[in-house]
Amino acid sequence: MRKSLRRSIAGALLALGASSALPGLVQAAPNEQFFPLATYRVGAYASSGIPVWAGMIDYLRYINEVEGGINGVKLVWQECETEWTAEKGIECYERFKNGLDGAPVAVYHPNGAPAAYALSDKAAADRIPLITLGYGRTEATDGSVFPYNFPVMLTFYSEASAVVNYIAEREGGFDKLKGKKIATVYHDSAYGRETQGPLALLAEKYGFENLQIPVADPGNEQSAQWRQVRQAKPDWVFLRTWGVSTPVAIKTAARFGFPVERIIGDIWASSDEDVLPAGEAGKGYLALTPYPGGAGFEIHRKIKEHILDKGKSDLKDPKSFGSVYYNSGLVNAAIAVEAIRAGQAKFGQRPLTGDEGRWGLEHLDVDEARLKAIGFAGLMQPLRLSCSDHEGGGAAKVQQWDGAKWNLLTDWVQADRQTLRPLIEAKSAAYAKEKGIAARDCRAEQ
Image 1 (cartoon, rainbow, N blue to C red):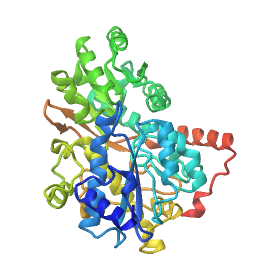
Image 2: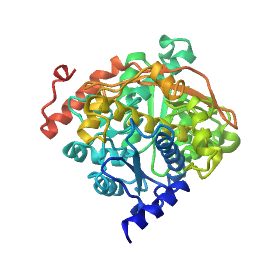
Image 3: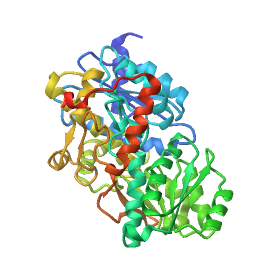
Image 4: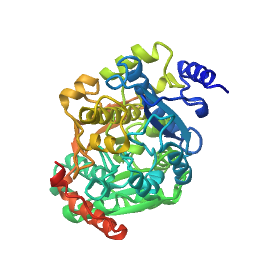
C-alpha cells in the first residue's frame, strides 16, 4: 500500500475516533511526538481499561486539535494489545521503543503492574522513562537508583498510609487505632502484595491488628476469604482487588453480612465499572482515588465542546464520560504532556527523546495555578517531582458510591511519606546492590 494511501486511511480512522484500531495504518513523521499506548481492550480487565484509553486519547486529540500540539509539536499515537500480561506488555514495548516513522518516544506508560515490573530494567537500558501512576515499583520513588522509573502521584505505600490516615480520622484520632482490626483483602499478585510492608510498619506504629487475606486471580469466587473476614470481625476492610474481583468482593461481603460502608477500595477498585456490577450491594462502598469521578471539572467542559460534541471521542459508551477510569486517562495523559512541556523548556520546542523526557519528568512542577490553567483543578493534586522524588503528591481523596454516582467525602488525604521513606530507601538500596547499580548523587542534579 502506498504511503499516501495509508495516510488517507489513517486520517479517516482518526476522524472516526479509531486512532489505533488498525495499528499498522497509523503514520507519523519526525517532527511529531510519538505516544505509544499499551492497552488491554480484551481479556479479564478490558472493562477497566477501555475508559482509560478513551480519556488518554481524548486528551491527546484535544491537545492536537485545540492547542495545536505541545508548543506546536503534534502528537501521534498507536495502540498495542497487552491483555494486561507481562509477556505481551514486553512485546508492545519492544515494538514501540524506537519510535514510529522517525517520531521519538519521550515517555512510556506500561499500563499494568506486570509489564511495569518486567520493563523496569529494559527501559533503564533503553533510556526511556516509565510513568506508572498508582502502580508499579514503589521503591522507584527513589530516582537516584531508578532514573527511568516514575511511580507518580500515589504509590501503593502512600495509598496504604492514606487509608490508615482516613480510618484514624473516622475513628477520632490515631490513638483510637490501637486495638482495632484492619483486614486487607488483596489480589494475590505483585500489585496486591505491595502494601504489606507499609501496613506492617503502620500497624506497629499505631497498634492496630493487620490481617492479610489473599484472593487468587481472577477472583471470581471469594466465599473462603469473606468467611475468614466474618470470623475475624475486622473494624475495616481495605479492598485491594482488580477487575472482576472487585464486584465479586462487594457482593460476597454483603452475602456474609459485612457492612459495605466499612470497606475502602484502593484506587484500582474505585471506579464505576467496579461498583455497577455489584448492584444494590455496592451502595455505601468507599474508595480512595487520586482522580475522582465526575464530569464537572473544567477539562471536561473543554473536551465535551471540542471532542465529544464533534463526534471525535474514543468513548464507546458516553456514560463513561467523567467516570473514574476515564478521568485517570485524562490525568495520565496530562502528566505526560506537562512533562514534555517541561522538557521543551530546556531542549527546545521539538519532539523529545527518552532522556529528554526523563529530564522533563524530574523537573515537573504542576502547581495549583497550572492545574487551573489546564482545567484540572480539583481533579488532579499538585505535583512536583525531582531526582530524589519520583512520586510527588502522595495524596488521595475518599469517595462513596450512592448507587448511581460517586460523591466525594474528603479533600486530599495526605500520606505520611516521611514515615514511609526509610522503607523505600531500604528497598531501593537492596535493588541497587542486587543489580550492581551505582546510585546517582541527586544533590548534584538539582
